[in-house]
Length: 150
Image (cartoon, rainbow, N blue to C red; front, side, top):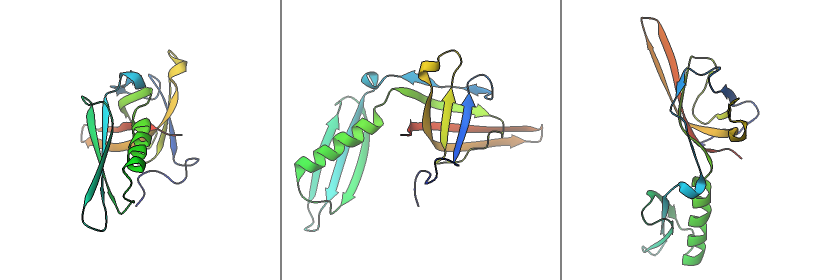
């Protein structure tokens, strides 16, 4: 299946920080402060593997595995740099905790707005959703914010 929504017009939700959120651990990070390393392995038909890397040597490693995507190391390195540009962004990271409204599910787009810092407003994919409920009654929906939605 697809990782993110095919219909960004209907699969979106709007969060206004401190208005329709209970809590959050959102951090605003700048792309130049993020330390990320991309490693790509391409498994070609003749049984050998081709490797390429991009990013910071001391960064958090993201690995990708491809099948039969050509045997050119330069194009594989370019692909790693494109993935690095997607993963290094200026914006929010973290989780938002709210009631069941607004409803969210994995793959939707969260529009995050702030009255205090309007220059930080942006749209992000939702990477995961955890629902917590009990008999007290308690109902919480925790949405993990992912990369920026274009």
